[in-house]
Image 1 (cartoon, helix red, strand yellow):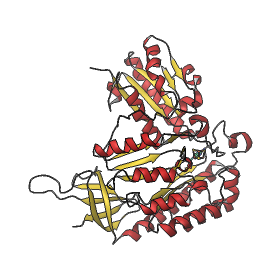
Image 2: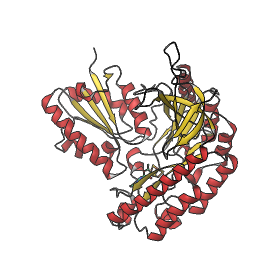
Image 3: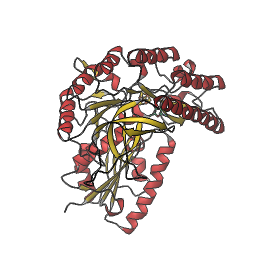
Image 4: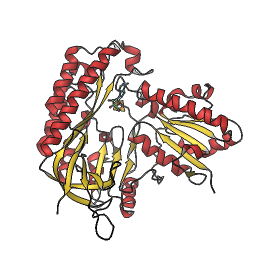
Length: 443
Ligand code: 5AD
Ligand code: SF4
């Protein structure tokens, strides 16, 4: 019996994909468990994007520190963006952490664990210009065996003024296309039906002469029954070529996550986003012209440095103009080391940030409901992903636009359900909430 590893993951999809790489690097030494209480090694894969995300992890580490008092053999490691940002400060804190490893140093985990077993602390926070973990076959954690993430690039060098990611994840680098296609083929052969290509900014994927549109074409051609999604796209380089590829392949999902951050050109310039409101709206118009039913989601920051009421109104008006299907919405959080931290004043009072954020959330709630209401009466092909937590006769899946459709799954006389997880089925939408479409099986 191998000792047990528990990985607790916070933050973005890339972190969840990295945890699968961590599990793979350690699979000769550890089996994974879903239960932290029985683990011999706990790795916390962390996010630094907002202060709140870091505070949550620090509180969790206090719980693990008290667990260690009861179980002295337990080892705790902190990996990911917080490891990169805080480095030795973490080892010197009273959190009793054994191991600190940054996002580009996961291959050194086995040797660092040897150090830890010998009673020392282990740390590696070197960033790399070439590491992509490209030949590592991830251990699929917590998987429904239907959809999987495939990281296609790492790092970011856009240096948006508010963002800590370029400092914690280093320079942009792309993974070799053959290894990406091979991973998609292997997943499909094992029964997976959907892959999501991941990167901080997938549109700047570049491997030799191959750009992101070219890569999408290669992955889409793996099999027409393999759905392909991607995230995240930076609006500044959303190309017509990508829109054309999305339109050309039925198995490329008609959905794009296109973070706008603000609707005010003045704010976008201060944020160093490298596009303005008009550019963004033109890109949305180009998408809608080629793919009228494309789902569009976004990220929005409320209360960035210097944001006026007029700037905020412009964000609300842009949201209405685009009519987003979904949004992630945040209060601006000042991050040490960023351009904004060094050069601007975090001058929007917290209660104003909260009020603006609430207005943004309320508006998005209405927009999501409107978007879902437009789908009532339509029929969608969905990929069945799981069983509803509340009612085991209700299953759910997503349509191409990334909307969740919940439906009743009849039990057949032989005791099996009519459709199974991993099936493609047609559902007719009869009703909706702001969050889900309520469907019935058709045919
Ligand atoms: N404060 C608030 N939100 C932030 N994001 C990135 N940095 C910050 C910050 N300092 C948001 C952006 C980005 C998403 C991943 O997180 O909207 O698109
Ligand atoms: Fe952060 Fe901007 Fe890079 Fe996204 S594109 S990770 S917001 S710096």
